Length: 201
Ligand SMILES: [Zn+2]
Image 1 (cartoon, rainbow, N blue to C red):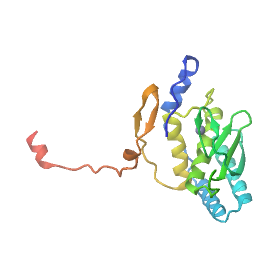
Image 2 (image 1 turned 45 degrees about the horizontal axis):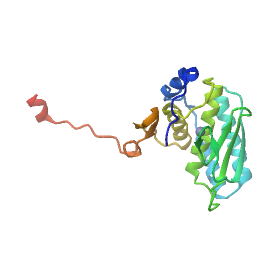
Image 3 (image 1 turned 60 degrees about the vertical axis):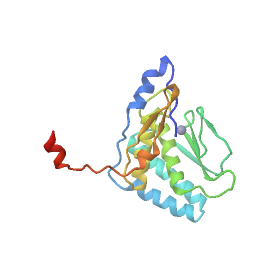
Image 4 (image 1 turned 45 degrees about the vertical axis):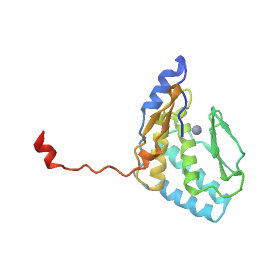
C-alpha cells in the first residue's frame, strides 16, 4: 500500500491536512459491525441482491452518523482487470466524487471467485472514506495519504470488531510512503523491567 505523492502548491495545505488527520470518530453502537456480519453471510450464500441492499444500509448508516449527504452503491459481479482510480490502481472498488457513487466488485477478475469478506469490507470502508474526504473534511480532492489509510483502517476495524493496529510507515522516494507490514503486524512490544540497568545508571 503506497500513498500518493504530495500535490503541487494550490492544494498542498489540504493534502497535508489529510495526511495529518490519522483518526476518525467512530459510532459507539454496533450497527455497522452487525450490518457487516450480515454482509458476510450474504456473501457466503452468494446472495448478491442481499449484499447490495446491506452495503446500501451500511453506507446509509455511516453517512447518517458522519452527517454527510448519502452516497449510492453499485455492487458488480466480476471486476475489470484494471480500474484506474486517481492515479493508482485499485482493483476492488472506486468512488466518483461527481455522483457520490461507490462501486465494489464481488468477484475477482481472473478466477471469478468471490472476493474475500475482509477485502470486500475494507474496500467499502476505503471508498466511503473518499466520500468523507469531500463531504465531511471538504477537501478539494481525496488523496491516499497516510492519514487517509489510517482513517479507512479505523472504520474497517470498527466494522469488523477487530482491534485497531498502529500503522508504521516507511518513506519512499518522491515524498511517498508505504506501510511497513512487518512492524505493523508485530505484536505490541513488552516493556521489560530490568533492575540491573536501573542500578548501574
Ligand atoms: Zn482510493
